[in-house]
Image 1 (cartoon, rainbow, N blue to C red):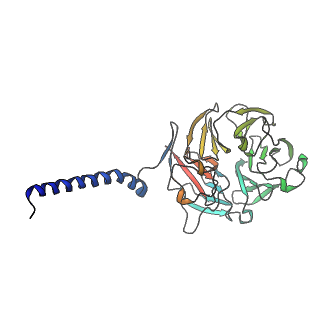
Image 2 (cartoon, rainbow, N blue to C red; image 1 turned 135 degrees about the vertical axis):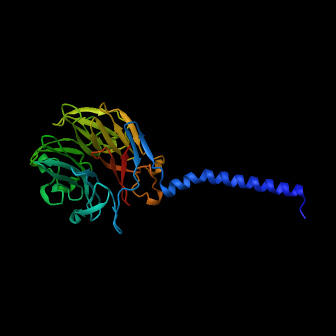
Image 3 (cartoon, helix red, strand yellow; image 1 turned 45 degrees about the horizontal axis):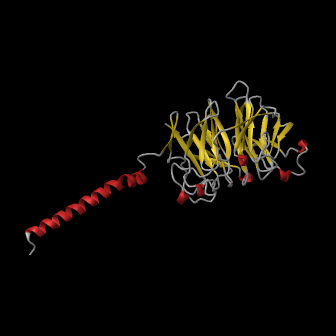
Length: 345
């Protein structure tokens, strides 16, 4: 028989054990609920650039996925999102609500890298920089090729087409076209709207006006006189040029292997390959970094498996685009394929 004092000790021990278990459960429950139920989206940024990581985007049907995403993202006038991939679905299209709509470009698989979207006489077109085919293509939104621009033979720089591996294309308000040979010989090539060759500038080097992988190019219209932004990736800097290729400045922005740009009002978004997105203001000062990858070993690592991906943390941002509502879509250089929507708060 257990006496009353023993019963008291047992009761107190049971009570303490119960309190400990309850306390532990209370401490763990919010984390379990967050991971399981997704009640609280991960929030990034600050001020006007505050976003939530949208885990509901995109929505694929059974058996469909991105495949390797080593490309770009653009958005048409109706809000449809176009993502380029290395798969047989070279261009994947999503409705504004995030549902997969269709894809095209089986014959373009394995090299659609940079994508720009432009409007001409009320109709939209895509410009595609194709690394593997050593050319730039102009297509309709449904994939009909309307113009092919081969390697810039008239530049006198290239001895063969294989030396030319364009990574990005941009179109000025005048219609002039600029192509960055990021994976080739590190030149920028300038064409008329009809793809007539005008000039080339840049070339390999570390001094101002030279490049080490001019990966991305953008026509910056934030000021009265437009200029050219170049993501000089392996020099870890951004350079600006006049529309005829004269160097203006090397930006002192805090970037990590910049890949590509987008513009919204006076702000520029930069896809930093080493695990984050950077927002610059009208004066090219850093406003915020989004989704900074805390593990240096995962930054710019194409082979990180989905099991190691975390919401709120980028791995290898490669292309990006704001939609009309200010939501930001980020395409990452990942073999398993990831495009993220950051919903503006």
